Image (cartoon, rainbow, N blue to C red):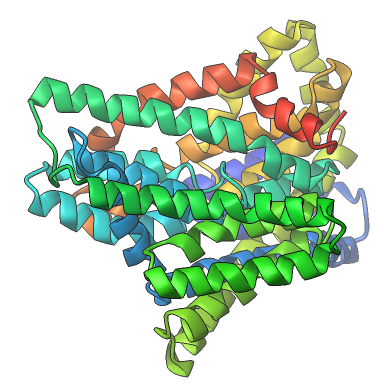
Length: 468
C-alpha cells in the first residue's frame, strides 16, 4: 500500500500529470510486488474504458462545444438579463441563472466557466462590478454544471458505483435548485452591503416575454401528457409537440426557448424510457446540431470541425485519466489497501452521519489535488463498501461526492475552474483565489444541507420510480 500510494504522491509532488502518475505507480507496484503479471497493466487499463456508459462522455462534451459555437450562450445571457437583470445586483443574478440554463446542456463546470464566463465577466466589469466579484460569482455558478443534469461526473460515478445514471440525473435537480437559491441570496447580500442597484430598468414587456418562454417550455411536456391521455401514441404526440414548439419559437423569435428545451428533452426522454443516459448524450448532440444548423443557422462546417477536434482532445484526456485510474483502483483493491482504509474508517465510527462528515473532509481534500474523474475512480472503490455497509443510499452519496469535487475545482493547487477564470479575467491565481473565498460559504451550506437531508436528493428519483 505504501509503495502504491507513496509512489503516486511522490510523482504528483514532482509535477507529473495525474494520469501518468497513477499508471507509473501502478506499474512500479506490479514489478516490485509481483502480485500479477505486468501484462495485466494493459489489460486492466483497456477494460477500464470498455464501458457503454462511458460513451456518454464524448457526446456530452461535443454537445457543450456545439452549443458554444451555435451562439446559444449569447441567447441564454439575453434571456437571463430579461428575467432577473432588473433585480439589485442584477448581473450577478444573471450570471447564476445563465449557468443554471447552460448546465442543462453541457454537464461540466469547465465548459460553463469558459463558455458563459467570458461573456459574463466582461459584461459585469462594463457595468462597474469589481473584477473580483465578477470572477467569484462566475466560479461559484460554474459548479452547477455537474449538479444539474446532465452531468459527466454522474456518468463516471454511476459506472463505478453500478447505480442508475438516470436516477443520479434526477437526484441532482433539487440540490441544483438549493444551490441556485443560496447563490442568489449571496448576490442579494453583496448588493445590499455595497448599495448596488439594478443593471437594466424593470420592464413588464421584457419580463413578460421571459416568463412566456418559461411557460412555453413547461407547456411542452404537459401538452404531450394530455395528448397521450387522449389516446394518441407518445411518438406522434412528441412530433406534434416539437412541430408546434418550433413554429411558436420561429414566430415570436424567443431568446432561449430551444436552449431551455434541452434538459426537458433529455430528462423527459430518459424518464419515459425512450433512451438511456448514454443515448441521451447522442440526443443532446443532435439537438445542438439542429439549433446551430437549422434554427439559428450560426454553424458552419469549419466551426463544427473545430468543435469536433476540441472534443477529441478533451475526451482523450478524460479517458486517459479513467483508464489509468482503473488499474490504480484495481490495485488498491487487490493489495487490500482499500479494505485497510475501509476498516480504519469503520474503526473510528459506525455512525453514518459521522462517517459522512469524515467523507466530506476527505473528498474535499482529495478534490483540491486530483482531477474530478480520477478522484471518483479512486475513491468509489474505497468508500462505496462503507457507504453500503452503513445503509447510505449510493445515489445520495454520489451527489455528496460530486459537489465536494466541484468545490475542489475552485481551490488551488489543481482547481481547473480557478485557472480558467484567472486566464479569462486576466487575474493572478492569488487574486482569483481570494475572489472565490466568500463564495465557499453558500457552497458549503448547500453541501451540509445535501449531506444531512437525504430527501433533497432522493425524493425525485423515488417519485419517478428510479430509486427505492
